[in-house]
Image (tube, rainbow, N blue to C red):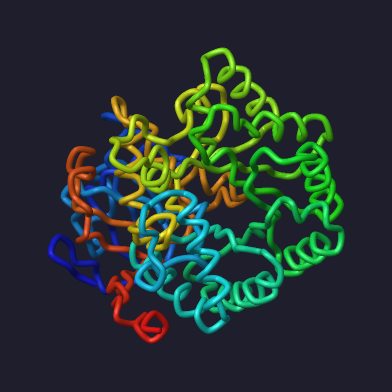
Length: 437
Protein backbone atom coordinates (compact mmCIF):
# COMPACT_ATOMS: atom_id res chain seq x y z
CA UNK A 1 0.00 0.00 0.00
CA UNK A 2 1.21 3.50 -0.82
CA UNK A 3 0.29 7.05 -0.02
CA UNK A 4 2.02 10.37 -0.39
CA UNK A 5 4.61 9.81 2.32
CA UNK A 6 5.31 6.06 2.22
CA UNK A 7 5.03 2.90 0.12
CA UNK A 8 4.88 -0.45 1.91
CA UNK A 9 6.81 -3.30 0.26
CA UNK A 10 4.84 -6.12 -1.37
CA UNK A 11 6.69 -8.76 0.63
CA UNK A 12 6.08 -11.17 3.49
CA UNK A 13 9.18 -9.95 5.31
CA UNK A 14 10.38 -6.36 5.22
CA UNK A 15 11.76 -3.50 7.29
CA UNK A 16 10.16 -0.33 8.55
CA UNK A 17 13.36 1.67 8.65
CA UNK A 18 14.16 4.93 10.38
CA UNK A 19 11.07 4.83 12.59
CA UNK A 20 10.36 7.05 15.58
CA UNK A 21 8.53 5.26 18.42
CA UNK A 22 6.94 6.52 21.64
CA UNK A 23 9.31 4.87 24.12
CA UNK A 24 6.60 4.28 26.72
CA UNK A 25 4.78 1.98 24.26
CA UNK A 26 7.79 -0.16 23.29
CA UNK A 27 8.48 -3.34 25.27
CA UNK A 28 11.82 -5.14 25.31
CA UNK A 29 13.79 -2.42 23.56
CA UNK A 30 15.77 0.52 24.88
CA UNK A 31 17.50 3.39 23.11
CA UNK A 32 18.37 6.99 23.91
CA UNK A 33 15.12 8.96 24.07
CA UNK A 34 14.35 12.55 23.21
CA UNK A 35 11.11 13.81 24.78
CA UNK A 36 10.04 10.20 25.11
CA UNK A 37 10.74 9.26 21.47
CA UNK A 38 13.26 6.64 20.31
CA UNK A 39 14.61 5.67 16.89
CA UNK A 40 14.44 2.07 15.70
CA UNK A 41 14.04 -0.28 12.74
CA UNK A 42 11.17 -2.76 12.79
CA UNK A 43 11.38 -6.09 10.97
CA UNK A 44 7.91 -7.26 9.91
CA UNK A 45 7.49 -10.93 8.98
CA UNK A 46 4.39 -13.04 8.39
CA UNK A 47 2.15 -10.33 9.78
CA UNK A 48 4.06 -9.95 13.05
CA UNK A 49 6.77 -7.77 14.54
CA UNK A 50 9.77 -10.06 14.23
CA UNK A 51 12.34 -7.70 15.69
CA UNK A 52 12.83 -4.20 17.07
CA UNK A 53 16.38 -3.18 16.24
CA UNK A 54 18.58 -0.17 16.85
CA UNK A 55 18.30 2.52 14.22
CA UNK A 56 20.21 1.58 11.06
CA UNK A 57 20.91 -2.04 12.03
CA UNK A 58 18.19 -3.93 10.13
CA UNK A 59 19.33 -6.56 7.57
CA UNK A 60 20.27 -4.76 4.34
CA UNK A 61 18.98 -7.55 2.09
CA UNK A 62 15.34 -7.09 3.10
CA UNK A 63 12.82 -4.90 1.26
CA UNK A 64 12.56 -1.61 3.06
CA UNK A 65 10.07 1.18 3.70
CA UNK A 66 11.96 4.28 4.81
CA UNK A 67 9.81 6.28 7.24
CA UNK A 68 12.36 9.10 7.29
CA UNK A 69 11.93 9.40 11.06
CA UNK A 70 8.12 9.22 10.87
CA UNK A 71 6.33 7.91 13.93
CA UNK A 72 5.04 4.36 14.42
CA UNK A 73 2.33 3.76 17.03
CA UNK A 74 0.46 0.63 18.02
CA UNK A 75 -3.22 0.60 17.10
CA UNK A 76 -5.45 2.60 19.41
CA UNK A 77 -7.88 1.73 22.21
CA UNK A 78 -11.17 3.65 22.66
CA UNK A 79 -12.43 2.52 26.05
CA UNK A 80 -15.55 4.66 26.53
CA UNK A 81 -17.90 5.10 23.59
CA UNK A 82 -21.63 4.94 22.83
CA UNK A 83 -21.97 3.05 19.56
CA UNK A 84 -25.72 2.71 20.04
CA UNK A 85 -26.19 6.49 20.23
CA UNK A 86 -23.85 7.62 17.47
CA UNK A 87 -24.64 9.44 14.24
CA UNK A 88 -28.26 10.50 14.60
CA UNK A 89 -27.60 14.22 15.18
CA UNK A 90 -29.27 15.18 11.90
CA UNK A 91 -32.41 13.33 12.95
CA UNK A 92 -32.56 14.58 16.53
CA UNK A 93 -30.14 17.42 17.40
CA UNK A 94 -29.71 19.02 20.80
CA UNK A 95 -30.91 22.59 20.21
CA UNK A 96 -29.27 24.19 23.25
CA UNK A 97 -26.26 21.91 23.75
CA UNK A 98 -27.09 21.28 27.42
CA UNK A 99 -26.92 18.03 29.37
CA UNK A 100 -30.67 18.00 29.95
CA UNK A 101 -31.25 18.68 26.26
CA UNK A 102 -29.07 15.68 25.48
CA UNK A 103 -30.97 13.40 27.85
CA UNK A 104 -34.36 14.46 26.53
CA UNK A 105 -33.48 14.15 22.85
CA UNK A 106 -31.74 10.80 23.22
CA UNK A 107 -34.76 9.45 25.07
CA UNK A 108 -37.13 10.68 22.38
CA UNK A 109 -35.05 9.23 19.57
CA UNK A 110 -34.56 5.90 21.36
CA UNK A 111 -38.29 5.44 21.85
CA UNK A 112 -39.07 6.42 18.27
CA UNK A 113 -36.26 4.84 16.27
CA UNK A 114 -33.89 2.42 17.99
CA UNK A 115 -34.74 -0.77 16.17
CA UNK A 116 -32.05 -3.35 15.42
CA UNK A 117 -31.96 -2.15 11.82
CA UNK A 118 -31.49 1.49 12.79
CA UNK A 119 -28.78 0.74 15.35
CA UNK A 120 -26.94 -1.66 13.06
CA UNK A 121 -26.57 1.01 10.37
CA UNK A 122 -25.22 3.57 12.83
CA UNK A 123 -22.94 1.14 14.67
CA UNK A 124 -21.53 -0.18 11.40
CA UNK A 125 -20.78 3.38 10.28
CA UNK A 126 -19.00 4.12 13.55
CA UNK A 127 -16.93 0.93 13.46
CA UNK A 128 -15.87 1.54 9.86
CA UNK A 129 -14.68 5.00 10.88
CA UNK A 130 -12.78 3.78 13.94
CA UNK A 131 -11.14 0.97 11.96
CA UNK A 132 -10.01 3.33 9.21
CA UNK A 133 -8.48 5.65 11.82
CA UNK A 134 -6.49 2.80 13.42
CA UNK A 135 -8.49 1.63 16.46
CA UNK A 136 -8.31 -2.03 17.46
CA UNK A 137 -10.26 -2.26 20.74
CA UNK A 138 -13.48 -0.47 21.76
CA UNK A 139 -15.70 -0.58 24.82
CA UNK A 140 -19.20 0.75 24.27
CA UNK A 141 -21.94 1.55 26.75
CA UNK A 142 -25.38 0.38 25.64
CA UNK A 143 -28.53 2.08 26.92
CA UNK A 144 -30.29 -0.65 28.88
CA UNK A 145 -33.59 0.87 29.89
CA UNK A 146 -36.04 -2.03 29.56
CA UNK A 147 -36.84 -3.32 27.00
CA UNK A 148 -34.00 -1.68 25.00
CA UNK A 149 -31.39 -4.13 26.27
CA UNK A 150 -33.23 -6.98 24.56
CA UNK A 151 -32.56 -5.26 21.23
CA UNK A 152 -29.14 -3.76 21.86
CA UNK A 153 -27.23 -6.67 23.39
CA UNK A 154 -28.15 -9.35 20.82
CA UNK A 155 -27.24 -6.86 18.08
CA UNK A 156 -23.97 -6.09 19.86
CA UNK A 157 -23.10 -9.81 19.96
CA UNK A 158 -23.73 -10.05 16.22
CA UNK A 159 -21.52 -7.03 15.55
CA UNK A 160 -18.78 -8.36 17.81
CA UNK A 161 -18.69 -11.61 15.83
CA UNK A 162 -18.77 -9.82 12.47
CA UNK A 163 -15.92 -7.47 13.44
CA UNK A 164 -13.74 -10.12 15.06
CA UNK A 165 -10.18 -9.74 13.84
CA UNK A 166 -10.68 -6.08 12.98
CA UNK A 167 -11.99 -4.42 16.16
CA UNK A 168 -12.42 -6.25 19.46
CA UNK A 169 -15.60 -5.12 21.21
CA UNK A 170 -16.75 -4.95 24.83
CA UNK A 171 -20.14 -3.74 26.08
CA UNK A 172 -21.49 -2.22 29.29
CA UNK A 173 -25.15 -2.24 30.30
CA UNK A 174 -25.88 1.46 30.92
CA UNK A 175 -28.91 1.11 33.16
CA UNK A 176 -30.94 3.62 35.19
CA UNK A 177 -29.65 3.08 38.72
CA UNK A 178 -33.18 3.39 40.15
CA UNK A 179 -33.83 0.05 38.41
CA UNK A 180 -31.27 -1.66 40.65
CA UNK A 181 -33.87 -1.80 43.43
CA UNK A 182 -36.47 -3.31 41.07
CA UNK A 183 -35.60 -6.97 41.50
CA UNK A 184 -37.28 -8.16 38.30
CA UNK A 185 -35.98 -5.40 36.02
CA UNK A 186 -32.47 -5.47 37.44
CA UNK A 187 -32.32 -9.25 37.37
CA UNK A 188 -33.21 -9.20 33.69
CA UNK A 189 -30.50 -6.67 32.88
CA UNK A 190 -27.87 -8.60 34.84
CA UNK A 191 -28.86 -11.81 33.05
CA UNK A 192 -28.67 -10.13 29.64
CA UNK A 193 -25.26 -8.56 30.35
CA UNK A 194 -23.89 -11.88 31.60
CA UNK A 195 -25.27 -13.82 28.63
CA UNK A 196 -23.53 -11.49 26.18
CA UNK A 197 -20.26 -11.17 28.08
CA UNK A 198 -20.91 -7.61 29.17
CA UNK A 199 -20.36 -5.44 32.23
CA UNK A 200 -22.69 -3.60 34.60
CA UNK A 201 -22.87 0.19 34.45
CA UNK A 202 -25.05 3.22 34.97
CA UNK A 203 -24.87 6.94 35.65
CA UNK A 204 -24.54 7.85 39.32
CA UNK A 205 -26.14 10.84 40.94
CA UNK A 206 -27.59 11.71 44.33
CA UNK A 207 -30.52 9.33 44.85
CA UNK A 208 -32.56 8.11 47.81
CA UNK A 209 -31.10 4.81 49.08
CA UNK A 210 -27.91 5.45 47.08
CA UNK A 211 -25.79 3.33 49.42
CA UNK A 212 -28.24 0.46 49.07
CA UNK A 213 -28.20 0.86 45.27
CA UNK A 214 -24.41 0.67 45.17
CA UNK A 215 -24.35 -2.35 47.50
CA UNK A 216 -26.91 -4.16 45.38
CA UNK A 217 -25.05 -3.34 42.16
CA UNK A 218 -21.68 -4.49 43.52
CA UNK A 219 -23.10 -7.67 45.04
CA UNK A 220 -24.86 -8.58 41.80
CA UNK A 221 -21.61 -8.03 39.90
CA UNK A 222 -19.71 -10.20 42.38
CA UNK A 223 -22.30 -12.97 42.32
CA UNK A 224 -22.27 -13.08 38.52
CA UNK A 225 -18.56 -12.56 37.89
CA UNK A 226 -19.09 -9.19 36.18
CA UNK A 227 -16.94 -6.07 36.18
CA UNK A 228 -18.37 -2.56 36.64
CA UNK A 229 -18.00 0.58 34.50
CA UNK A 230 -19.93 3.64 35.68
CA UNK A 231 -20.62 7.17 34.47
CA UNK A 232 -19.79 9.24 37.54
CA UNK A 233 -20.40 12.85 38.59
CA UNK A 234 -20.85 14.26 35.09
CA UNK A 235 -21.76 17.66 36.48
CA UNK A 236 -20.27 20.95 37.62
CA UNK A 237 -22.22 20.79 40.90
CA UNK A 238 -19.82 20.44 43.84
CA UNK A 239 -22.38 18.74 46.06
CA UNK A 240 -22.54 15.78 43.66
CA UNK A 241 -19.54 13.63 44.54
CA UNK A 242 -20.63 10.01 44.29
CA UNK A 243 -17.09 8.92 43.40
CA UNK A 244 -16.17 8.74 47.07
CA UNK A 245 -19.14 6.50 47.83
CA UNK A 246 -18.13 4.17 44.97
CA UNK A 247 -14.60 3.85 46.35
CA UNK A 248 -15.95 3.30 49.87
CA UNK A 249 -18.31 0.58 48.63
CA UNK A 250 -15.62 -1.30 46.75
CA UNK A 251 -13.33 -1.22 49.78
CA UNK A 252 -16.05 -2.11 52.28
CA UNK A 253 -17.36 -5.07 50.28
CA UNK A 254 -13.93 -6.28 49.22
CA UNK A 255 -15.12 -6.38 45.61
CA UNK A 256 -12.40 -8.08 43.54
CA UNK A 257 -13.71 -7.31 40.06
CA UNK A 258 -12.49 -4.39 37.97
CA UNK A 259 -14.19 -1.05 38.54
CA UNK A 260 -13.88 1.78 36.03
CA UNK A 261 -15.38 5.24 36.37
CA UNK A 262 -15.82 7.78 33.61
CA UNK A 263 -16.10 11.59 33.63
CA UNK A 264 -15.69 12.46 37.38
CA UNK A 265 -16.11 16.12 36.42
CA UNK A 266 -17.18 17.48 39.79
CA UNK A 267 -13.97 16.20 41.38
CA UNK A 268 -12.22 19.19 39.81
CA UNK A 269 -14.68 21.54 41.57
CA UNK A 270 -13.77 20.44 45.09
CA UNK A 271 -11.50 22.16 47.61
CA UNK A 272 -7.98 20.73 47.82
CA UNK A 273 -8.58 18.75 51.01
CA UNK A 274 -11.70 17.03 49.65
CA UNK A 275 -10.10 16.34 46.29
CA UNK A 276 -7.03 14.74 47.87
CA UNK A 277 -9.14 12.59 50.19
CA UNK A 278 -11.22 11.25 47.29
CA UNK A 279 -8.25 10.74 44.98
CA UNK A 280 -6.47 8.75 47.69
CA UNK A 281 -9.55 6.57 48.19
CA UNK A 282 -9.83 5.91 44.45
CA UNK A 283 -6.18 4.85 44.40
CA UNK A 284 -6.58 2.63 47.48
CA UNK A 285 -9.65 0.97 45.94
CA UNK A 286 -7.81 0.26 42.67
CA UNK A 287 -10.42 2.04 40.58
CA UNK A 288 -9.51 3.11 37.03
CA UNK A 289 -10.62 6.44 35.57
CA UNK A 290 -11.36 7.53 32.01
CA UNK A 291 -11.66 11.21 31.11
CA UNK A 292 -13.76 12.30 28.13
CA UNK A 293 -12.29 15.73 27.39
CA UNK A 294 -14.10 16.59 24.15
CA UNK A 295 -17.61 15.68 25.29
CA UNK A 296 -17.14 17.18 28.74
CA UNK A 297 -15.83 20.47 27.36
CA UNK A 298 -18.87 20.53 25.07
CA UNK A 299 -21.51 19.89 27.74
CA UNK A 300 -20.12 21.19 31.03
CA UNK A 301 -20.55 24.80 32.17
CA UNK A 302 -22.78 25.58 29.19
CA UNK A 303 -25.11 28.44 30.04
CA UNK A 304 -26.90 30.59 27.49
CA UNK A 305 -25.18 33.90 26.82
CA UNK A 306 -22.23 33.15 29.12
CA UNK A 307 -18.70 32.06 28.34
CA UNK A 308 -17.75 28.79 30.09
CA UNK A 309 -15.48 29.23 33.10
CA UNK A 310 -13.93 25.76 33.37
CA UNK A 311 -12.94 22.86 31.13
CA UNK A 312 -15.22 20.15 32.51
CA UNK A 313 -12.51 17.51 32.91
CA UNK A 314 -11.41 15.54 35.97
CA UNK A 315 -8.22 15.77 38.05
CA UNK A 316 -6.15 13.79 35.56
CA UNK A 317 -2.70 14.72 36.86
CA UNK A 318 -3.57 14.29 40.53
CA UNK A 319 -5.09 10.86 39.90
CA UNK A 320 -2.05 9.81 37.87
CA UNK A 321 0.33 11.00 40.59
CA UNK A 322 -1.62 8.90 43.12
CA UNK A 323 -1.06 5.77 41.03
CA UNK A 324 -4.51 5.56 39.45
CA UNK A 325 -4.72 4.24 35.90
CA UNK A 326 -6.15 7.14 33.89
CA UNK A 327 -6.98 7.19 30.16
CA UNK A 328 -8.93 9.34 27.70
CA UNK A 329 -11.54 8.32 25.18
CA UNK A 330 -14.01 9.53 22.54
CA UNK A 331 -17.34 9.19 24.36
CA UNK A 332 -20.29 10.25 22.18
CA UNK A 333 -20.14 10.88 18.45
CA UNK A 334 -22.55 13.09 16.49
CA UNK A 335 -25.46 12.70 18.88
CA UNK A 336 -27.17 15.05 21.37
CA UNK A 337 -24.40 14.55 23.94
CA UNK A 338 -21.65 15.62 21.51
CA UNK A 339 -22.42 17.07 18.10
CA UNK A 340 -19.06 16.22 16.55
CA UNK A 341 -16.34 13.55 16.46
CA UNK A 342 -15.43 10.53 14.33
CA UNK A 343 -14.01 7.94 16.77
CA UNK A 344 -10.54 9.08 15.73
CA UNK A 345 -8.08 8.43 18.55
CA UNK A 346 -5.59 10.86 17.02
CA UNK A 347 -8.14 13.65 17.43
CA UNK A 348 -8.94 12.50 20.97
CA UNK A 349 -5.25 12.45 21.85
CA UNK A 350 -4.53 15.81 20.27
CA UNK A 351 -7.42 17.50 22.07
CA UNK A 352 -6.63 15.76 25.36
CA UNK A 353 -3.07 17.06 25.26
CA UNK A 354 -4.39 20.59 24.85
CA UNK A 355 -7.34 20.46 27.23
CA UNK A 356 -5.66 18.45 30.02
CA UNK A 357 -2.14 19.87 29.60
CA UNK A 358 -0.57 16.46 29.01
CA UNK A 359 2.45 18.19 27.49
CA UNK A 360 5.72 19.65 28.80
CA UNK A 361 6.85 16.95 28.92
CA UNK A 362 5.04 14.66 26.48
CA UNK A 363 7.12 11.62 27.35
CA UNK A 364 4.25 9.61 28.85
CA UNK A 365 1.27 11.07 27.00
CA UNK A 366 1.05 8.39 24.29
CA UNK A 367 -0.16 5.83 26.81
CA UNK A 368 -3.56 7.50 27.33
CA UNK A 369 -5.10 6.17 24.08
CA UNK A 370 -3.07 2.94 23.86
CA UNK A 371 -1.47 0.91 26.65
CA UNK A 372 -3.31 2.35 29.67
CA UNK A 373 -6.85 1.87 28.34
CA UNK A 374 -5.81 -1.57 27.08
CA UNK A 375 -4.67 -2.50 30.59
CA UNK A 376 -7.90 -1.17 32.08
CA UNK A 377 -9.90 -3.28 29.63
CA UNK A 378 -7.93 -6.39 30.54
CA UNK A 379 -6.02 -6.50 27.26
CA UNK A 380 -2.36 -5.68 28.05
CA UNK A 381 -1.41 -7.30 24.74
CA UNK A 382 -2.96 -4.35 22.87
CA UNK A 383 -1.61 -0.81 22.61
CA UNK A 384 2.08 -1.74 22.79
CA UNK A 385 4.87 -2.45 20.31
CA UNK A 386 6.67 -5.68 21.16
CA UNK A 387 8.43 -8.50 19.35
CA UNK A 388 6.14 -11.39 18.45
CA UNK A 389 2.98 -9.27 18.50
CA UNK A 390 0.79 -8.77 15.43
CA UNK A 391 2.05 -5.93 13.24
CA UNK A 392 -1.03 -3.82 14.00
CA UNK A 393 0.52 -0.39 13.64
CA UNK A 394 -0.22 3.19 12.69
CA UNK A 395 2.45 4.86 10.53
CA UNK A 396 2.65 8.65 10.56
CA UNK A 397 4.63 11.16 8.57
CA UNK A 398 5.02 13.30 11.71
CA UNK A 399 8.51 13.00 13.15
CA UNK A 400 8.18 14.97 16.37
CA UNK A 401 5.44 15.88 18.81
CA UNK A 402 4.86 19.36 17.43
CA UNK A 403 4.31 17.92 13.95
CA UNK A 404 2.04 15.19 15.28
CA UNK A 405 -0.14 17.55 17.31
CA UNK A 406 -0.41 20.32 14.71
CA UNK A 407 -2.14 18.35 11.95
CA UNK A 408 -4.84 15.66 11.89
CA UNK A 409 -2.44 13.05 10.40
CA UNK A 410 -4.87 12.38 7.58
CA UNK A 411 -2.11 10.73 5.55
CA UNK A 412 -1.48 8.00 8.13
CA UNK A 413 -1.15 4.36 7.10
CA UNK A 414 -2.91 1.77 9.25
CA UNK A 415 -1.31 -1.69 9.21
CA UNK A 416 -3.12 -4.78 10.37
CA UNK A 417 -1.20 -8.05 10.43
CA UNK A 418 1.63 -6.38 8.54
CA UNK A 419 -0.46 -5.05 5.66
CA UNK A 420 -1.93 -1.65 4.96
CA UNK A 421 -5.72 -1.47 5.12
CA UNK A 422 -8.13 0.50 2.96
CA UNK A 423 -8.50 3.73 4.93
CA UNK A 424 -11.44 5.18 3.03
CA UNK A 425 -14.00 6.50 5.49
CA UNK A 426 -17.71 5.74 5.13
CA UNK A 427 -19.78 8.41 3.38
CA UNK A 428 -22.32 10.24 5.55
CA UNK A 429 -24.79 9.69 2.74
CA UNK A 430 -24.77 6.01 3.71
CA UNK A 431 -26.89 6.99 6.71
CA UNK A 432 -29.53 8.85 4.72
CA UNK A 433 -31.97 5.90 4.54
CA UNK A 434 -32.37 5.85 8.35
CA UNK A 435 -32.03 9.58 9.02
CA UNK A 436 -34.39 10.91 6.35
CA UNK A 437 -37.54 10.05 8.24
